[in-house]
Amino acid sequence: MRNIVALDAPSNLGLRPPAPGTVPGVYKLAGALREQGIVRRLGALEGGVVVPPRYDRGDWQEGDGVFNAAALRAYTIKLADRIEGHVWAGDFPLVLGGDCSIQLGAALALRRVGRYGLAAVDASADFRHPGNSDRIGAAGGEELALGTGRGQSDLTDIEGLRPYLRDEDVRLFGGRDAFEDDRAELAALKIPNTTVGELREWGVDELVRGHVLSLETPVLDGFWLHLDADVLDPSVMPAVDSPDPDGLLPDELLALLRPLLASPRCVGMNITIYDPDLDPDGTAGALLTDLVVAAFAQS
Image (cartoon, rainbow, N blue to C red; front, side, top):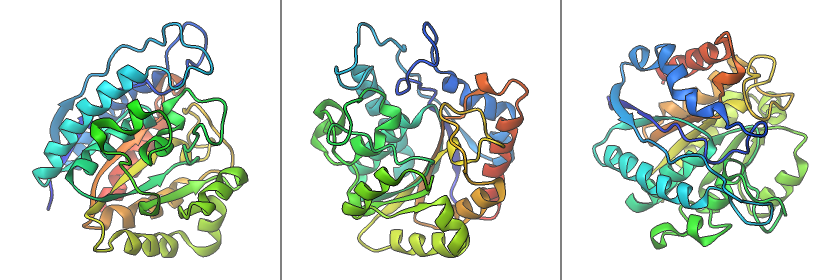
């Protein structure tokens, strides 16, 4: 049995301000899930905190590339150092974010170690890059593109390790059926992606177990699990920056997470995007914690 190590990565560097003069509240995610007892309930060891740089977009304007880029680069390296140490030790790091840009820290860490895949459970592909958009800026919506080598070199080629992830080693789950433009590009690149509608039509368990087998191929040393809370339907998870309709329901997410976490080749996981500022009574945070704890319990 591997030790689960809870590691806080409270970075909001990759999101746009929710309103002028404010900063995204996702940096409170780790504290909110800890308040729900996630560390105790999982029997996890304490991994501490990787403190992010200050959120400051300065005089950034549209067209300037990714904002907070220097801070993101520094934080990615710092977070990768911590994750890499736990992977070498045989631990299972559970990284409590933060926005989705923290996934770059895991991708860089694993690229240093070997060749790893990614199972991303997310409402969107986070695949915005200069080749498909003129609105580059928020790394939290671009981390998969950056991780696969698309975008500015200060973020895509840290330590000369571009790409951190190969296209064929990525699996996406829970995208909205309405995002057809994203799907067309992913299909052309042969990046497998399974929408909410497809999961329901074919059965979550059967589809996911097939993808798990493909991630357990000998060519990979393992895979990382990325969970974005916005994969859930806004009726149960409104506390995210982009609450798109027609998402997964709690039982469906649980059925999706269980076989991924049950795989001995799953080496770690991060949780992102839940914003306690948008959840004043803590209901959504309690649900998210319950789901993660239940998924580990059956893994």
